[in-house]
Length: 250
Length: 202
Image (cartoon, one colour):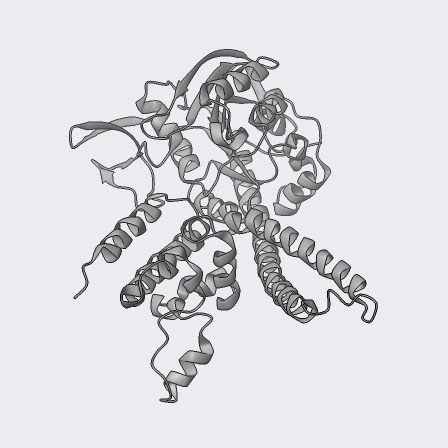
């Protein structure tokens, strides 16, 4: 079948995509005109354009929402699983030699299952986040990219944030302590795990965090509004960091 | 409509007549099609002929729609297939600015899905970054008219990180012989490292 045999609007295209058929090199506009559904080839193309754009818009929006929710859920799961693993390891460390008095075996089994879950979840994030946010994932690693998206509440929200907010995402407690007047402002939130922040000596770490946050913010905006991978963003960050890390003391 | 050329800073670049979609430069009223921003432009600059004028085109791996927008400036009809939601969303935005650019949100590995929407085409252009790039081209061969031209971008690293790029290009070209007559392979350096375009005919 063809889409125009089902109708001439977006629903016809969507239905046809769901049904499918046998690929061939038919002259669809010609056939459609001959069958009398459209008066001209241009008429056919105009209707197809409206139908494909509308139909794709609906499905793509749903898919973006789903993909984003999946990534956010996955990265939150990863954090919970990671915390549980650490806690279990700490708690059972002293038990290990005393298997006859405490139920260590089951705990170790559960722990290993958790570890497997963690690795699978990380694999999922590494696969899906670059599809959702290619530039952010290129500049940060996909897990950090996903954490930023989750903390912001979505890519759209992240893309709208000033970079000074991105810089302290995940350091909300420290930020509120500062706003109450009890502490200095936090230099960084979760972007601390970025090698360029963590790997910069302490007196320049604030500058490094600012530079990284600035570039990640631009990456999020390109991902949200353009969507194409721009490798030059990473080059620009590399150059900037070279200058910051190369500064002399004093 | 056709693909033109403009001179900028002593270099010649492809350019098309159409509405701007990104931050591309406009020179003499034409949209500059930069070979570092688009593999198709890199191929054109390297002397590959892509007969887009008045052509019906099946474009697999439409991405965020930047290159399809240039195609649509010159071609009669462009069917752009993309399956990753985020770029597909941008592709739909771009398609809204081009009357003859038709976005298809589907997996290019399953061409039966869009069989009732895509017509027989004169040009198949493919830039998908998944494994089995040659298989995708072969599966979509039924859409290509006899004598139609086929351009398959091969990214050496998405197949196997250890193999030499040339070996990979050859392997893809061999597999494409199942459905096409392969003409030649053109590597896209210095614009894209580890990328080549395999050129064939149905």
